[in-house]
Image 1 (cartoon, rainbow, N blue to C red):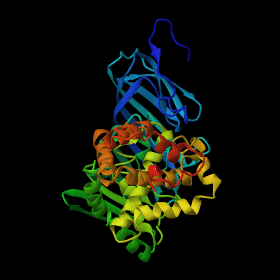
Image 2: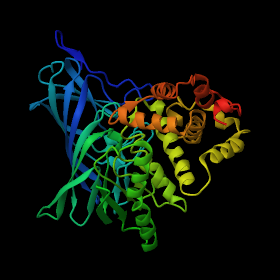
Image 3: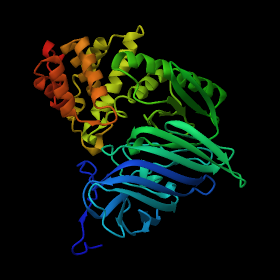
Length: 449
């Protein structure tokens, strides 16, 4: 699709993240997604459309969308647009006429296909056993079921409408708007997320669920547990999920107001192998004996990872390290091991393990985003910072980070600069030792011991 002489510029095929060069797109900023999908669990066929309301950040003669499903049509501001697939993940759109810089555009993408058959960068992320379907993964999930500017740097609000068999329940982010049954045995469920959300955090779950709703401390909650689990599993899972409002309240006292208008969680019978912090409603597998700490971790992500998302995927330790540190602080606050004792125990445990220190935590590379050091060394760095600058300054760092960047993004460099500003200390050597050095930090006071 060559550029026509005299027309506008081309939106880039990536948003600029070196880890995943094709993720996201340049030339526009999405304000809102309206996703309308119909999914048949019996056949695995998904038919739907996504309407993106976006603003052109440059004059555009063409732009890209991220979507793996086969495209039926694209319309831009009501006019049919030319569309060409560019690899498994990219769709190139040429509107009927160029879009002026600063202009709002409405892009409607229609598609149909079987997401269970799709893969991207070696990932086959569609979870479905014919009884339950859950769209959860990180860093990629959106393009299996809707058209997107698929990178955390471009957040947007969402309306999600899922049509499926009427004897199933649909759960998604935000607040339940309504459910409408049709005469053909299907029903359409409408969920709305009114706060900006990264595309990978958007989800829907389809299945038979035990649901509990309510309001605690003025905050609505919606929790769901798969009925495909045993009665004992359901009872345990519901007990864990019902602790969510309590954890939210505890964290608000620590780091400031909860950033969203609802909360909750969902336990699936499927086996994703991990829990995920889907915005307002994390998704959990069947959890083990320490399941409550996993809930604490995912609720902490609502501040660190969801409300304040990574600027780029290299900054993932800010999500995982801070959320893991909240686990240690919860344990400390509820009569368990102190977070400092936890730090020193882990330090001793890993001191003679070169592989644990080899990874650069603030730039782990795309193949190592979720390696153990990102979580544990990131959390150890957070506790060491707490000891180095003191409890009051540490909490001020977290509160300032969460408040000033609410609904936005942040990088490791920005977090490090904030910690130095709040504490009034030069912390360059401290962060070098914990995040970037390939060997254990010296066990000295300057490093939080």
